[in-house]
Image 1 (cartoon, chains in turn red, blue):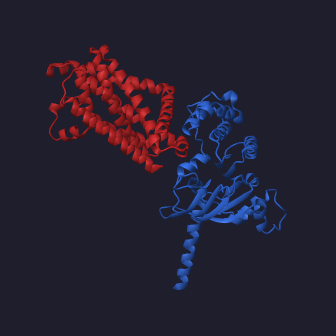
Image 2: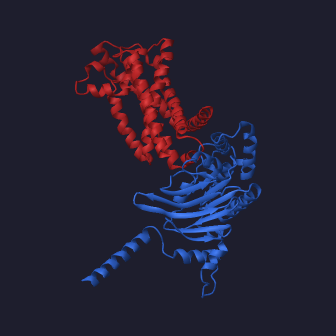
Image 3: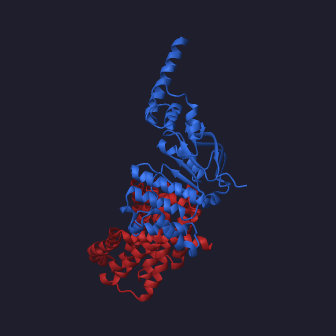
Length: 250
Length: 277
């Protein structure tokens, strides 16, 4: 078990080093949520406030955080496809380690990087006019991390089946957009038409948005406990699926 | 008694309906340099991927360093070092970081890690470039680093898949000197596949395989002796190369051979059909 931890840590450190050495990746990860917040948020603010009487920025913030988890997390799967295409995966596959530790290292590194992006988005809240108590930052962290684990595990599941970067990119996009649009991140859940409702309620991202929305002082649809349960189930089941797919591969 | 380095008995590997390796048997002793030769698509890579536990055999029994590749894969991996045809370094990490990562993944005791790494750096002769990202290395530097890296966990058997492909003559010679020194100093067993037959001449024994089957096995001299001496003046090439071409034929492989085979089959069928009528 101690050995498992050491290997996960070593592989995670490697992934983080790679991320930090790719400057453009860092900049784009930070710029994307800011663009959404500042440009979309400012544009919609007036209209939304007239209709509902709530502050759109405060409403949008959890949505943009979830979006950065979704897109950032799925992007982390690229490193896995890259490793396979450019050989490093083989170095790991002939090592005397289990497939679980390979998945563990990727999962941890991906979730850390993804969480950081979402957390930085949250840290920008005061600049776009959303004042938050300190407790909100602390409370948001576990939800951000839990959701990141689930999304990164999903990326690993896709990566386990993809042989090329192009294939991975198109499939990840195909998955990301519906998950994003069906997460009630841009619109209130109570106005969703009935045919769309089951889809929104089946989407784990909806619960991430719902939890974060309550934490930043907006109105939630379910209780935080229900959100926590769904997100935990999501993270655990996809992690297990990723481990299973990698085990079969090796 | 020490176990054979590799003991491969009636190994078969199938991909769907394709029989890549067909009841192949060979073995070699610790300390031996063993060459695996064959044209493209002969099944060399399939054999190698079974030996280094990346693929399960469809049939047969394979033991590496005395361990069963299916049941004791983890133990096999501890005792082997593999250098693949394609570079498997992390190109964003420095040479030193690549070595460190390897040492950590293989669970080298932190107390010995420093010394092992230092040894590896001296061995690959890359001290001045060791802190640069490996994407700035030349092909030869990458190979030297890979060779040093694989020795960090002190394997008993090395598997090298065309380790010198794409390298210039000087680098190839240098790598070979490295390899021979290592064998003498550490008693390493080595299995290598190569397309350069003058390199294979240095092997203690050689197996030539074609279409998944063993067609010759023995020392380079023994194999060369199997083939009748050329009636024309001896060519400037090595004797093993002559024997090899004699044994596997001069046909080009893969697509070209496939087309030719299909054409030949079609013509034969037509001929037979004509007779029947």
